[in-house]
Length: 104
Image (cartoon, rainbow, N blue to C red; front, side):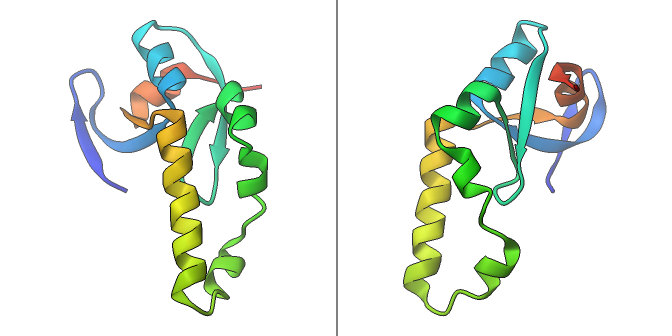
């Protein structure tokens, strides 16, 4: 994980988030956030369902390790890039992320 020096929180890990989570941080509001485990991105509920992310979460690390050829690996990488573009991937420091995250 990369690090960033946040003006408010000091040295923190970098968290990848959708544009809605980033906007919530700027507007000082909270959101229900879903973690996309295989991609290490955190998204709001709208992005989670709008971009069919539950299907992506079915891919396990074992599935990736079992890939036998470059074509299959390329297909997964393209899917990951498509999701990152669709959600408007942004970054927050770990402290700022905690301020936005609404935990049920």
